[in-house]
Image (cartoon, rainbow over all chains, first blue to last red; front, side, top):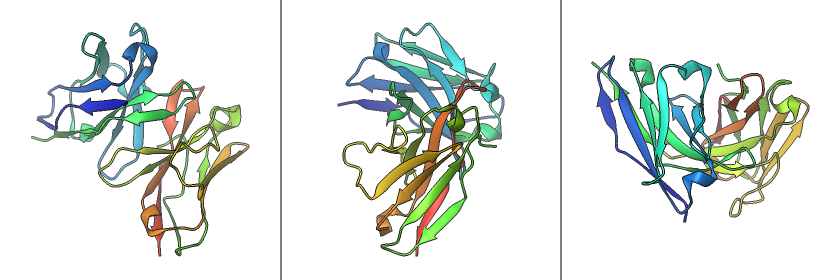
Length: 118
Length: 111
């Protein structure tokens, strides 16, 4: 069955970077657009980034352009999200999610909590 | 600030019907982009509840239904149950931003 398994919680200092991973199984990353969505404590969902099935194109939400990088490794079926220059406002749960051709997110990882604290 | 606006909270007694609204604009819902709804329990990943405006994935009770009109969408929960008490989010696509967008979220409380 379709499964997305993310890496464990991280604690980082302000100014540092963090790289979160998401391992896919039950389907091929080459067949779907894959995304990252985040949720700050007590807040709503915020779409961050998408990578196309070929892996050649990525797009980032305006709020994150220049500060995040989404990559993938098809040999290990793993997605990555790297966030640079962390601030306390980046403290959030980060989710990877598969985009259905119908425009909705039909499978989600279990989430990775990133805490930014000095 | 979310592109799609939802009321922060709605409440209803068990068995009653509640409606959650999602207000957008001419660059998202009003442009004909589909609206999808997610249910999210605390500490859990969002779960797809309604896709393509009014379709339920397998396993979602028919107590949940969706609709759209103009630049808005609604999620209705009929026969409200205690287990429905949680957060709900709408989602669509915005052509002006070229982004996938979520609503601000609504907390449903069962009285």
